[in-house]
Length: 432
Image (cartoon, rainbow, N blue to C red):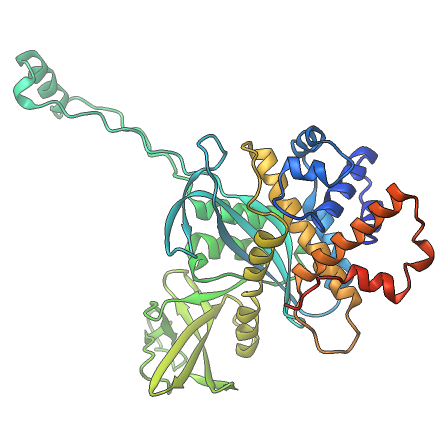
C-alpha cells in the first residue's frame, strides 16, 4: 500500500527488518480472507507462521504510526477524541486478561477479554480512526477469608488467649488498607499515556455514560482535556446563585437543586430534528465542579423522550456538545468492522505481548482501509458509506492477479490502468 512507506520514513526509530515485517503484515491484513491467525497469515504472505509468531512478541509504536497516518487530516477540520471498551470472546484458561466483562450484545457479563479503544473522530466527516488499543487487565482476586472456628470446638486455652487479645491494654497495630486498583484506573491510564501528543490539538474527550465517574472525569481534566459525556436523568445538580450577596457572612454559591420538570430556568439553545435543546451552567456535587449541561427533549406519539449530556468546559456551545456526543457513536463502527473484516477476535495467542500486538495491528489495518477510501473520495462530493467488505474484496482480487503475474510470467504493468483490470479488481465488490 502506498500509504505505509511514507509513514515509515518518518519513524527513524523503526529498524529496517521490523519495517519490512510491518509492511507485509499490514498489507496482508487488508486482503486476508478467513480468520486472521498466525497460520493463515503464513498461507497468504511470503513469511512463515513462526516468523509472525516471533515478531508478534516485539513491541511496535502503533500510536506514533497512527498519528503520522492521520497527520494531514487532523491539521484541518474539527476533531475530538473518543474512548470506549469492547468485549472479545476468548476460549481457554491461560490467556492473559481473562475475566468477567460486560458483553453489550448479550446484555450480560461473560468470561473473555476486553480492550479499551482510543479513537480520533472527524466530526465534519463523521468518521472515526483508531489511535490505540489497550487490553483491560483482569482484576486481582480477593484474598480468601479464613474459616471461622466454632465456639464449641475451641479449648479453654484458646479462649483465654482470645480474651487477652481483646483487652484494652493490648495495642494491636492496624495495617493500612491497600488501595484497590479498578478498571476505571486502567482506562484513565490509557488516556493519559496515549494522548500526550494530542494536547493542544484536541480539546475534548467524548465517552458514554459509564465513564461519568469522579475519578475518571477529574483525572482527564487534570491531564488537560475536557470531557463530554452523559448523565443519569436523576443526577444530583445544583443551580448557581447569581443574586445579591449579604453584607456579612459567607457568600451564597448555590440556589437549590436542578429539577427537570420545570425548564423555565434553562436556555433554549435550538431545535434540531424535532428535538428541543436546552442548556444551563450548573454545579455537580459529585464531580465538585461546574458543568455545561444539555437537556434534550423529544416528543413522539404522545411520549416524551429525554437525554442529559454534559461537558466540563462551560464555554462550549450546547449544540457543539450535542454534535460531539453524536459523533462518538462512530467508534462502534470501528469495533464492528475490525471484528468482521480485520480479525480483531481471531487471535489464538495467550501472552500479553502477542494479544496487544494483534489487537493494535488489526485496528491499524482498518485505519489504512478507511484512509484509502478517504483519499479516493471525490473532493466536495457527499460522503458515501465506507464498505470495508468491498475494499477487502478489491484488495484480494488485486493480490490474486499479482500472484498470477508472478507464477505465470505475465506482465500486467501495461494494462493496470485499463478499465478491464479495474473491473477484475472490483469483481464481487458490494455496497455497504
